[in-house]
Length: 338
Image 1 (cartoon, rainbow, N blue to C red):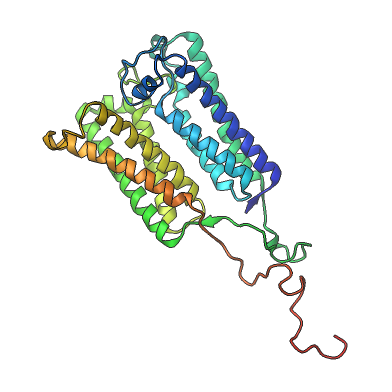
Image 2 (cartoon, rainbow, N blue to C red; image 1 turned 90 degrees about the vertical axis):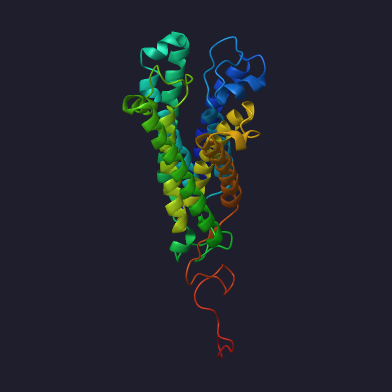
């Protein structure tokens, strides 16, 4: 299925609105910190980064901004961007949903002003609405390719008709292995954390609480891990069967995996954990290696899945003009009166 021109424009506008919303919050934080690098330090766990007011964004906001910008461009340039719109909508709903109860909780009111929290809540409602709009646009804006209409004036299959692409055979295997391994690593560390901090505090990592350090627009860390694992597994098994949705969903999952690893590597570099890797306890060595793997896996997925896949062919179809347009081709030796 391809998207109509109106659906493509609508999807691009919705993504642009989401990007502008996220960009506005990031811009607000950039004007608050003393040095732009302080915002990166805050995103990677340094809560003491210098700022004139409480910071509101997390690293996930920068990742979502990149996703929205890429999907908006894809929607304008390609008529087969429906799966990309759905992937952007799904990740928006998954990441922003906890904001409904986190921003309404009493403990969040102790960390920021009521005005700022109200603005963040309105922003969350808007993001959820736009995310739903992306999914509806992708579902309602589809049109059947001309190949399904043998009486179309464009012929059985226009030469320029584009169809959704699937990952190539080698790419699908790479994506399955990297996404599956990344999901297993993230899930294993989350399970280990749960055994270390106890059941009640582990639940707080999924729902958010005053015991969990997170910015105003942040997502509870356990919830974010669960979202990343779910998207990675869905994309991994989709890639194994070379499903159309596996490319955009795998790219979104790859961005989240890269962000998780990037945050960890930032912590490791700031604390000289990489230089002292051989002297660290086994647990810390495994943690640093996991972060490095996640960065490498995320980058590899972006490169591999970012390349155009293989288009689906239509059996028996012929390009217009290959045999005169309509009907069977003329015989090689036309009979008299042909």
